Length: 333
Ligand code: CA
Image (cartoon, rainbow, N blue to C red):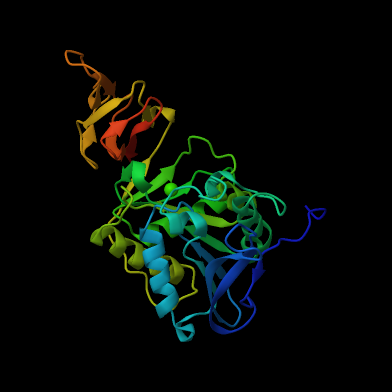
């Protein structure tokens, strides 16, 4: 790592200074419409003395809005008088993607959550990932990354952490999930964890917490309320913001194996047979994919490979072979 060149990103804030600072992570990006231009990624630092550091991000994927809505709000309202330690807020981590309203960056098609550890001499997305990997993650004790389903998935609102080999680290992460107090709390399994911000933070030993709070390329009043209350709860739980955690009821869910995921094997028009949060029995048809090229064709039935409840579903009305159709969670405790 030490052989890598320094990051080209220059912060306009001082991470060691007390008070509130609103600034930028400025990333030089020379292009047709701006020869010596930069990508200006908004960052806020709220610091008051010694204490733990929380690193909070939204917009890792650019078409997910609960995180940015909660974090621009937190940056505007968090008073250092109520803080012990440091809160670093990057509401729109993949800022080019966020401005375009797309999951990946319009500059390089980079998926931030598949770009870690990044490269200081790589694409714009890789340079942002590298800055988080080498400059921001090492400062943090707790790392919170907001997600939702984006344009192509919709989720029941849950806060989540991963099962980890280090059980002490896992326990701290699940305690922070519990403090967030979303309607659901997930012990999460990834389809493919390589290159994820989650994995980078966890491999550094950080307490890493994430969410899936809805989706469809927008947000709902309820999910934004959950996000705003939840992030304050996590900061209170960590002892960084004063005040008691506002506990709410949460239902823990597990994703025990790859059987919780179902994928389309045909293109077509999707008919969901179960709504989010509803119970599903093994073998039950959770969705049907209707061929649309001609009449008279039977739909493909997508059957649950385990019992649980519908935690996520494909969002738009048309699907392609390979799309994730549904995700099941199993209620625990
Ligand atoms: Ca996401």
